[in-house]
Amino acid sequence: MKATEQEPRDAAWNAETIGPLFTDAGGTFLCARWGRPVAPVVFGLADASLDIFRAAIRAGFGHAGHPMADTDPETGANLMLFFVRDWNELSAVPDLNRLTGLDDLPQRLSGQNADQYRLFRFDDRGGIRACLTFLNMGGALGEAHPGRLAEKVMMQSALTFARDISPSASLAALIRAAYDPILPVAATEPTHALRLAARLPF
Image (cartoon, rainbow, N blue to C red):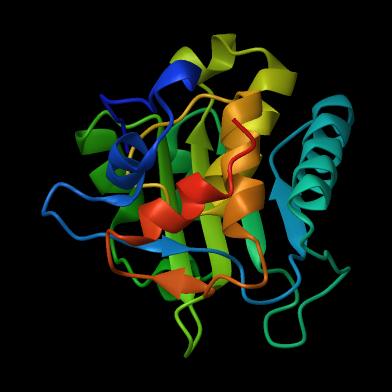
């Protein structure tokens, strides 16, 4: 959905500013990373743009130190990106209701004037096991630089950010810190921000 807040500027990265990135409007904190290799698939892009997004996903998860795979043994693909020019196009996606668990997603997104929507599924440890991202390129996103948008979409799928983010070297470092094998795959206590901040190289 549309978000109104963005991550803090690089100079302010600490536990106090990292915490809100993973805290929703109701005050619930969740920082979860992928608990299995990422197997992406992209729908609705021309070949040139498709190559940009594939490269961004590979580079982003490579930087985080997290493996990728051609297929997921349970679902085939577990990171699914859908690009449309109008939300009504989603009605043509087979089994969309079963895939999302929502009966009227196109109507909801149209009614909320959203430009994107992201849905996570979790495993029994709380780690991400699937991420579905829907992007409407018929509005403001259609003016975005493809490389910049690809980088942002990758970062949004890497962790359970609760607010809008903008790609930066500091954000990439935060994602890499969250993928430290010593840390739990998912955390619900705000004090986890302290552990993330301690692993940042600045």
